[in-house]
Image 1: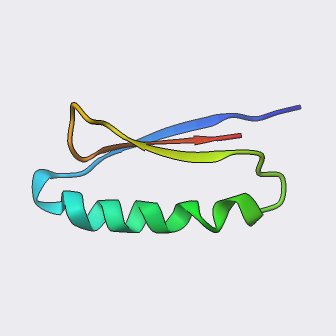
Image 2: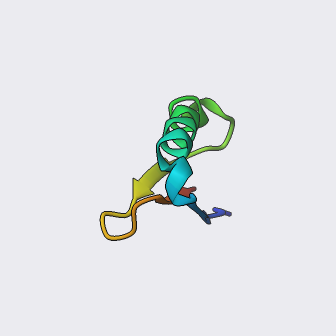
Length: 56
């Protein structure tokens, strides 16, 4: 069975840069976790500070 998770984060305008730095740091080690098939981070071009994670 495959589990898919979609999570989104909306940073406050004054914290967009700080949040971007933190969320980008969690992407690299995530594929090493047992059972992780895919782990992607997307940032909206239309809504700055909106980050979406997709994990399988």
